[in-house]
Each structure stands twice: as structure tokens, then as C-alpha cells.
Image 1 (cartoon, rainbow, N blue to C red):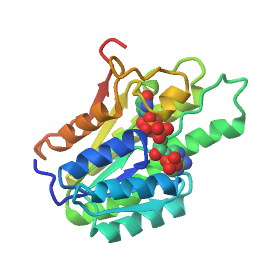
Image 2: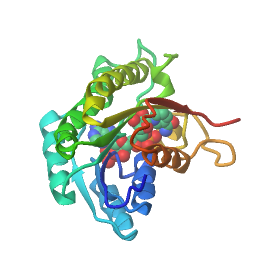
Image 3: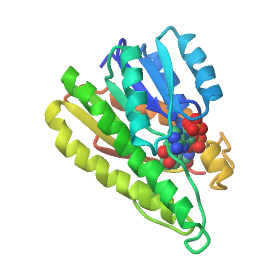
Image 4: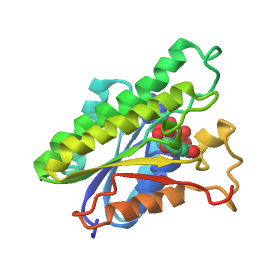
Length: 237
Ligand SMILES: NC(=O)c1ccc[n+]([C@@H]2O[C@H](COP(=O)([O-])OP(=O)(O)OC[C@H]3O[C@@H](n4cnc5c(N)ncnc54)[C@H](OP(=O)(O)O)[C@@H]3O)[C@@H](O)[C@H]2O)c1
């Protein structure tokens, strides 16, 4: 499928995996709205996106605040003249043992990673419905398929995203909306390197560009085809 002329919102598009997806979709001719909290990153990324010849805009909001998510998505939809694709990517990785992590931090991880995905999808849905078709890519994690030590909040948030996303898929495919649940393993980024999950060695470890190519290729499939779930791993990290 040709993606040229479509409009995509990428949450967390100012850095990491989200930025790589925004750039690769822009290379396909997709107009892009990115979101996040860090205006400097968002501004710089919007300039890069415009340099690729597409429309680009940003909205600043925190994923855990529903009213702000709604307002930000509506503003981007207006700037872009509608929305065809949501890359529901923003998230935080806070790692630590159950007894040491504060309840406030635990709750914040769930609020950002789970409620944020729910708020953004709910805010975008009317725009996709209006167009009669669309795509939502929910970025979960292999941590959502199996918990492990020092990741209770993160793994629980991502397990819930997997389940939420499956429910969205079942409800919204009737409106020709493809809801895609992705469960990537470790990819070199601020989150994984600062969290001590990987050294990010580009010779062996997945890079954001690998993730972006995967997302692009899934979106380019004929609309009759829906990749409902998928995982990606480094071959031999
Ligand atoms: N890297 C991995 O190994 C890996 C593996 C599996 C899944 N994932 C998932 O992939 C997604 C992207 O991760 P990444 O590796 O690119 O992480 P990252 O480099 O830490 O980037 C996180 C992104 O999310 C945004 N964000 C975080 N908290 C936010 C909040 N409260 N409100 C609004 N935006 C917020 C950040 O934007 P601002 O800084 O502007 O707020 C940033 O753009 C996450 O959902 C993560 O869980 C990552």
C-alpha cells in the first residue's frame, strides 16, 4: 500500500523508537504529528521531518493526563487535516524491585504506559472512524508477555497494553481499523541503555531504525491484511 499523503500521530516522537518511526514514515510521504514533554526534542524533530518534504507539527502533553492528551491529539488532527495512523509509542521504563520501588513510581508507570495508550487511542478513534479506515500501532513489549525481576510495574503495564490492544482490535476492525499489538524485545535507546538492559552495540543489538522498518512494512501491507501481534528480537545480542 502507498502511504503517501496519509497523516500519522506518533506519541513520544521526539526521540528513540518514536522518532525513528516518524522519520521513516515521513520518507514514505506521510505527514507527521509528534508528541512528548520535551519541546526542544520535538522542535528539532519537526524541523528534520519538514526537511523530508512533509507537513509536520508537534503537541506537548503528558500521556497520563486525559484532557491534555485529547486536546493535543485534536490540535494535531486539525494541523494535519485528519488522522490515518496512530503510533501509540510513548512510555516509561522504571525498573526496581517490588519492595524498593515506591508505590507512587509504580502507579506512575501504569498511568503513563497503560492509561496513556488508552487515552491516545480513544482520542484518535473518532478521526479514524470519520475516515472509515485507519491504523493503530500499540507498542507493548516482550516484558508484557512474561514478567521478570525488577520490572513488576513495567511488565504489568505492558501486559495490560497487550490485553487492551487485543480488545481494541476486536471492537474496531469492524470500522476497518487495524489495531496492531507489537511486543519488541530490547532495542538500543535511552530507556534500555540507561536502564542497564543493553550496551546498545549496533553490531548485534536492535536499533530504532530496525523497529521503524518493521512498523513501516506492516503498515504498507494491503488493507485486507492485519498483523494482529508481533515480536522482534536481536538475533544474537
Ligand atoms: N527500547 C526498548 O528496548 C523497548 C523494548 C520494548 C518496548 N519498548 C517500548 O517502546 C516505546 C518507546 O521506547 P524508547 O525505547 O524509545 O524509550 P525512550 O527513548 O525512553 O523514549 C520514550 C519516549 O516516550 C515519551 N514519553 C515518556 N513518558 C511520557 C509521558 N509521561 N508523556 C508523554 N510522553 C512521554 C518521551 O518523550 P519526552 O521525553 O518528550 O517526554 C520519549 O519520546 C515505549 O513504550 C517502550 O516501553 C521499548
